[in-house]
Each structure stands twice: as structure tokens, then as C-alpha cells.
Length: 414
Image 1 (spheres, helix red, strand yellow):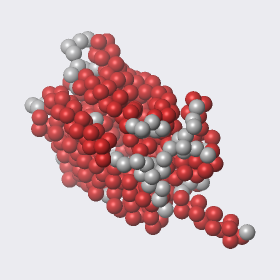
Image 2 (image 1 turned 45 degrees about the vertical axis):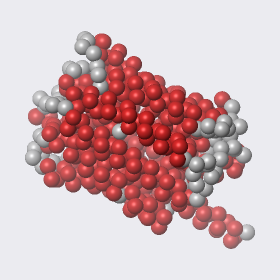
Image 3 (image 1 turned 90 degrees about the horizontal axis):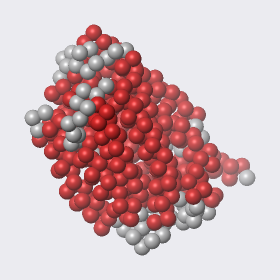
């Protein structure tokens, strides 16, 4: 519920309603996300240290949630100020909300990796967690439109309603989660923060995730502009977002079955091609193509479900392999660096897409003659990057089933 408004609505809110230049917003988002990303490996290390206390990984979660709530409310209650004042307010609250979000999520994902030691069960865990996460996203996509007379007032009310939901959800999660099946064996020191980079498989997985993540983040950054200036139905923006995330959740069982049958690697490649097919079509749409864009949102949403379910499961498999080699299991360190990569993807998407639109002199709501440029950045650019990610994953030496095959072949030869 927190991620979508920050990720999707902040650029449109601060540019369209508060009048900040797109290039300035893009620079602030890039700087804030890069600064935030630098702290994630350290937060992962601290999560591993906390795992040895009786309260375990719940400690960083409890400490991070007040920051998350305060920063979230602040972002959607900007003061009356000039552009410099708004820029400082945006930057400060982004840093606060990102710190709280990171502290909580890194430990939360590490807890998920420790719930089972079965490789296929992990995909079910990550897919189920992601499906409930998408439920929160659906609420965030639909609720602001019903809560206020405009999106700005709706988001302001929604941010206040988010706080009690955050408290209740955290209470249920921390009370109901049992002891880990795969306990952390980390004796990590500060030097272990970069331990994942010693893993060849992690480096390959990281490279694929960067390309695929940037490709997926660019449309998310620009969807509100696309809906307003190309489809010309800004009143349906919440519906399109809801379709995207609803079909992402509905597609989870498909990717669980596909990863089990084909292997996680090839299921992920299939999802990338599905995303490209959807977004290439988005390039040719025009004003009034509501149904067609709804189909684009549904199909790309199904592909997005794989991006949520499969990569974290593959990462947990890599941690398994490296844990045996290093005689420790620092899930927090790995997921901390993974969060860094994910934020780099978001930062790169904003840092690429928004200045690129400014370069072609795009202005929200007044660029009918430049719809081709907006459509190219929204649809064609991410499609090209996504194809590059699929090609890289094809040659990458990752994938649990492929590793089993090599091991069996080696044993048979011996």
C-alpha cells in the first residue's frame, strides 16, 4: 500500500499539481533512491545480527515502521512553499520513508527465505507473499480516487488511513510468524556486507534483475502521463492500475506451475517475452483505446507476477548454495543488497525516463503533438531493455533445476 503511491503518484502529484519541473523531480528521485540504496547492505547486516536475539528479525521491522508511516504522511501533505521549499520537503520525506521501508522490508524478505528449505516451496512462499502485497497495491490504486475530490486530496486522506492498517498488519505478521525452519547461521562482520558479490551466480542474477527491473520501472513511472496524454482517460487511471495488479496476483499460480515444470529460469524468460508483447502493442494505441490499453495492463500484469515471485525464490536458492560454501547463512546481507539493486532500478528508471521526456520538451497535459515521443519512452524503450534482460538470463548460469541436472550428470560420469 505504501509503494505504489510513492512510486507512481509522486511524480504526477509534484509536477502536475504543485508545478515542479519534471527534470528536478527526476533528479530528486534519483538522488534519494541512490542515497537510500547505499544503506541497504548495512541494514541487511544489522538484520542478520538481530536474528540471533530472541526477538529475531522483528527488531528492525518494529524500528522501521514509525519512519515509514511518518514519511508517507509527509509526502502527501506538502506545505505551501516555493519550488526550493518543495524540493527540500520532497527529498527529506523520501529519505525518511525509504529508511523505514528498507529496515522493515529487508528483514521481512529474509524471514520469508527462512520459512522453508524446499526450493519449490520457496516459490509458493514468495508468490503468496507477493499476491497479498498486490492486494495492498490494489487498495492503494483504487482508494485515493474515492476518498477525495481530486487525486491530491484523495492521497492525503489515504496516507492517514494507511497508518492504522500498517499497525494492524505488522502486529499480525510478527505475532503469527513462527521460528525459522532455516535459521540464520551468520557470523557476519561489517566486511561481510559485500559477501554476495563474491558469488558468481549472484552477480549474474543481479545483472539480469537490473535490466529487467529498469525495463519494468519505466512504464510504472510514466503510466499516469501515458493515460492522460495518449489514452486521454485520466479518470480511469485507477482502473488501469487495478487491472495491472489484479492480473499480477491472478497470474501467480501460473508462474508457480511454470517454474516447477520448466524451471525458474525459463519461466522468468517466458514472462519477459510476455511483457514485451504487451508493451510493444501500447506504442500504437491512441486516444480512446480504453479496452485495448486495459488488455495491455492485464497481460503485462500477468508478466509482472513472475517478476515478483521468481527472482526472490532464485535468490534464496543462491543463498543456500553459498551458505554451504561460506558456512553461514546471511539472508539479511543478501536481501539488503537485493533491495539496493531494486532501488537502483527505480532510480535509474526515473533518472532516464523523466529527463528524457524533458529533453523532448514534453509537458504534462499539453503535449498532444508529442504523444509519439511519450509512447516511445513508455513502450518501446522498456521493451528493448527487457529483451536484453531475457538474452542475458538465457546465457546466465543460474536456475535450480539446471544446477540439479549438472550435478546428476557429474555424478553419473563419476
